[in-house]
Image 1 (cartoon, rainbow, N blue to C red):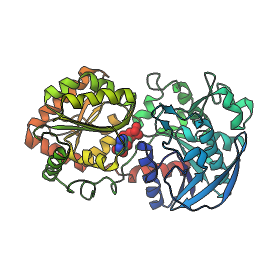
Image 2 (cartoon, rainbow, N blue to C red):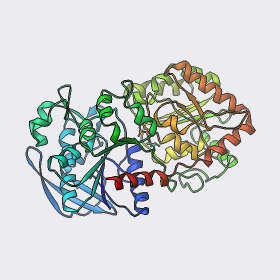
Image 3 (cartoon, helix red, strand yellow):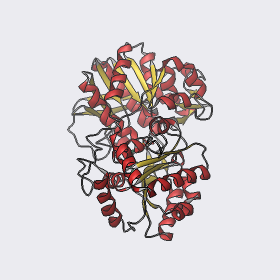
Image 4 (cartoon, rainbow, N blue to C red):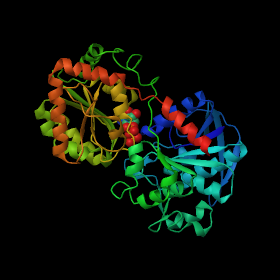
Length: 455
Ligand code: ADP
């Protein structure tokens, strides 16, 4: 079976969030199952390679693109579109030509699928949403799977861009890709793909409700017979405290973890006598920063240290930085993207915080479990599928959850976590139990393979 993945980011080449982890890892596990997979993505700045074939693609005007093949990846090269500082935009906002940039990716994907005898194109997120439409429009035999990694990002563009898509006006209707007068790439993927998936079973249900459907719940309900959830996995070659070269000292038990915690707190110039909450996150509304900011002083009063690594919304950046000035020996705010520091936070924290408004799957909590770092999460999406409340009496559960999206509910979960921390024997066994969970890709890769076979 010949599968072409198309995505806008993938490790080890370009990453802003969990999508890149998934696209970097899942093909490796599918290949182990005998599925032939190549990944198509844009050639962003810094991706090396030597020129191969050239294609001419029409997006209202003819565009010449180069193709670069490298170890299971095919890069689409068009420097004026992709050789930029950011992937999707700058701190000031999205690039104004994202419609053109990702239409080019979709059209190139369709052409590459045709030339390479592809059976299935597996499309990921809005940037690839036009591919199923184009293939249906050509009455192609190639089947499509469209995976939603985050329904909150839809690729909405004004209708005056429609002509560059190169399809008949008949597609621009509420049954097609129109969404309140705009073009909606994500909707195109949902409407025209043969199968639609998302990245946890719980999120597959939640997105069919008005609360978490981002205006597309009706469209998703229409596709409910073709919609399923497959939980993301973790690549334990990358995320494994026992072999992690990026942390102070690899470890496989609680004692080893404590050593990392002390080294890491010292590195951050923080006091070592407090439980540490770590966060590695895009700084966006979705991730619950409004709640954290409202109760930050209470978090300090409870007695936690707080270490954050993240980048995103500048309004949050400013507020979070202020806390570092108020609590210099207990708070470390790192506003950047830094793979090494991320590993050190997963290893050097006692708790990992994800108070998300919604969370399709969430990788942070899965990584933190492997590092024995106890997750404190909101009970939503994939977080609810993977974290269960700790019960000290029965010594069951792997974290702390809160349901209602309110500062008090979060504070309550944090208090329970702090309480658990004060019983050091019980906390050590909780941490070690977390390390035992297996969220590897093996099972989920099998599910994707079965889905491909069903097509
Ligand atoms: P999302 O995909 O919504 O951003 P996930 O929890 O699914 O959230 O995945 C986030 C991934 O990105 C994790 O691998 C996390 O470690 C990583 N990450 C997020 N922000 C940063 C950052 N500033 N530096 C390094 N890694 C980051």
